[in-house]
Length: 173
Image (cartoon, rainbow, N blue to C red):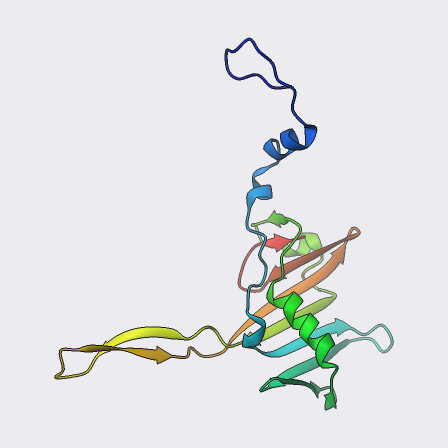
């Protein structure tokens, strides 16, 4: 039930509507972990714990044109549809919730993550206006920034999955 300030009337509202009002501030936060166009991906390095021989296993997927291949630990062709699904999921990765901005990675098992993902991509082309020496006119110039890499640590802790980007203090669930 709700009532507006000093009004005498009372209204009945759905519990789901009130629950949204009573959520903490993290409920309204942007939960975007990765936002990269699938066409911009160049390489993905997946590193996971190897339960059979110990240590870690690194798998490197590389894009040449529109074709993906495995370049490590062995060279191999890949199922394009499966890799494209992975790229689509990673490119628009959103968390269920923002856990903290304090960067307390150890509290969520992220100091020794069960998996890490490194995504190398080409950022969008930038346009700049440049004047040529001795010429008063300006012309737009297309500039391709260098490739960038996003590193993501993923861990399972207390029955939940947590993720943290290396370049941000935010821990996501």
